[in-house]
Amino acid sequence: MAALELGQPGQAYNLVDDEPVNWRDFTWTLAEGFGTPRPLVVPRWVLRLVAPYLAFMMTSTLRVSNAKAKRELLWTPATPTYREGIPRLAQALGRKGPTWRHERWWRSTKEQIGIFLTSEEHARSVAAHTAVFNTADASRAGNGAM
Image (tube, rainbow, N blue to C red; front, side, top):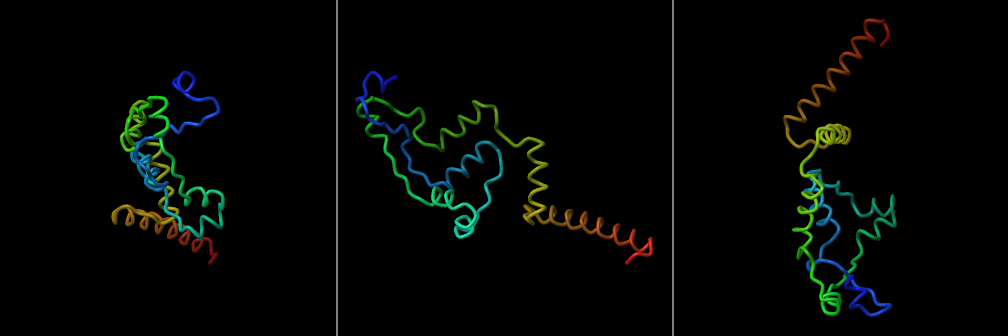
């Protein structure tokens, strides 16, 4: 409403917080705020090969300022930084902390790609996979197939 009442026709106003941030820090803070794992870190060359537009977007610097909005619209951000805003958003949406379904997905994913948070988890996964292969080998040996 402030832009309609106080703004100049044809002008753009950046409504952003007061702290510059890169994509990695923003997405990591977003994941933490919503209780999900951080996104996997992918080497830039892989990202450029697989998703060139995404690579360009995530590695480019886009600096914007809210000074014009503050000056002309008398606007101030509800939270001064994204670090304060993300937890407020997560709380407002009732999304703090991982859910059981999410935990199940993450455990499956990290086992598939070989990421383990603790040595105990790694040992359990190796034991489970070994048991599956040993059972399959025993089954083939019992059938006379080798």
